[in-house]
Length: 198
Image 1 (cartoon, rainbow, N blue to C red):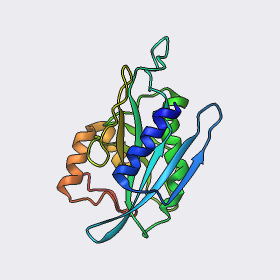
Image 2 (image 1 turned 120 degrees about the horizontal axis):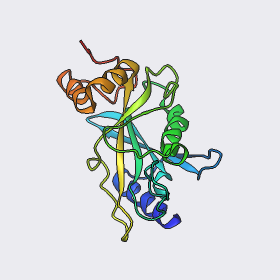
Image 3 (image 1 turned 90 degrees about the vertical axis):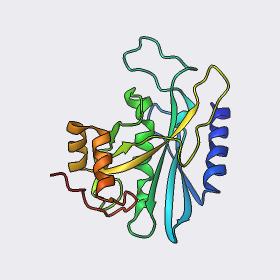
């Protein structure tokens, strides 16, 4: 486990630079989850990225499986990107750790297209309590591990308003992402409003 997390930590640093802050959260009956914060500039604007470290320590297992495989199975970490200075987004550390712990706590497999909900605002005054899990590979490349272990995938998470989450449940992740694209939605804006859903 420690070897996997050391490799994941190194991959995050090589892709995103040195973290300027990190916090650890431990939930009863689970391993510790860390959240690392990285500052960056994108097109002249300050952005901040939060990445989990600890979710990939164990493979995610199908909740219907009678016996959990401790070696094989999908592994992932979550990455959230928002514009800096517009909201108190550092308060997302605990909600993000809750989402990263969900495979251990709830026995779910987190994969692209999934919705994850924390049941409260992701940060103070945020219009979001859930996220859409997006496709990996853009920001941080998959980390190959020695066989028979599956690679670690770094999954971007996109905050959703409650209306967007409800619309996504009916129409699917691809339709919501298409709607965001059509309307030029800035998914990094921590204060954005819901995309038009009519």
